[in-house]
Length: 425
Image 1 (cartoon, rainbow, N blue to C red):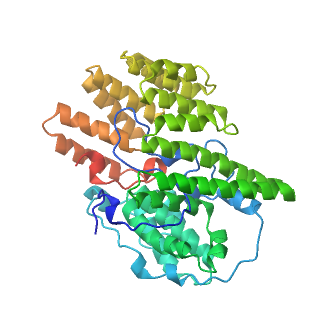
Image 2: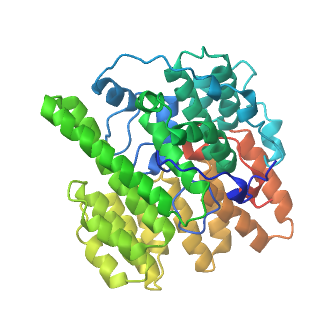
Image 3: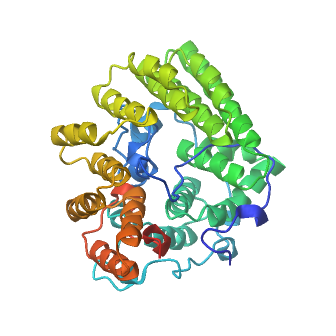
């Protein structure tokens, strides 16, 4: 069994391009955004899993609405037993989970329904339940089996087990790569969200620097464009809108994948070509790219074009930091306007730390964690502060772990159950 953070080098490579990324959970540095998929510009895997009627912050059509808008075709009779082999799926180790979470009274009972596990952020338990339900499905019910497979893979990604998810996706990707007669009918039944996950996992399973993932995204975009044209020709406006939204989403995903590859200038040129994407989305990404390459003046030019007040204000403070200026007062001003914003509090604490106000930073993070859901970067930052200001850092971290484990579970900020490395243990 691979370790939770082991490189996925042993994962098999596959030849079929099918889909794209979910948000990775990783240890982040100061001023990074929380690892909450709800904060991403594309549809959240948590939202899609837990509530079929939840939409993203850009008011993207819900998954259920999109599905109902697409043309209904007779369901082909496909034998799905190849996905119901128990040997395909791994038991999930608990060695990396902080012990207070395993012994917490907030752990759900064994018979908790899958939907409730997802809504409360118990993603490890949801991954286990999804496999149990999948193995008990009728083999002639491909839609249910594929939806449960999506739930399983998405939950594995959310608990930082992309390595296992890539291996468990292999039977499906291998079958599609062989292109048997039933493959075309099966692709038509695969949920769009699952196809995106498969592309992401395909990228995890290869060592080509992400190039295959980019090709897979362009292949999906070609399909989306063709389906959009078909819907337009048939006068099906709801279906046309679904594919148009998916095409815009894929454009942003390509930009994100290019950034992940380190191709920042290529990502910038790609964003120039996204004429049908929300202008604020493109400008915001361009500003972040300019900041990342150290072009403060260029970033300022894009920030000035932003209409989104909250994003604009945050970027203006980041520009101050990039110029080496004290940003404490600016973060405090923003936090007074949005007192419940845990990310602003986290950024203010980091700026206080840089300014030498380590006690103030510690107190701010502790009070924020008492009233808000925890996310990776705030846990990392407060754990770092404990290490800097106390010889009893391990004791303080264990007390923090116990406090977080006693909080009411929620699906926000990456789920409830946390690994020991989130607390630098």
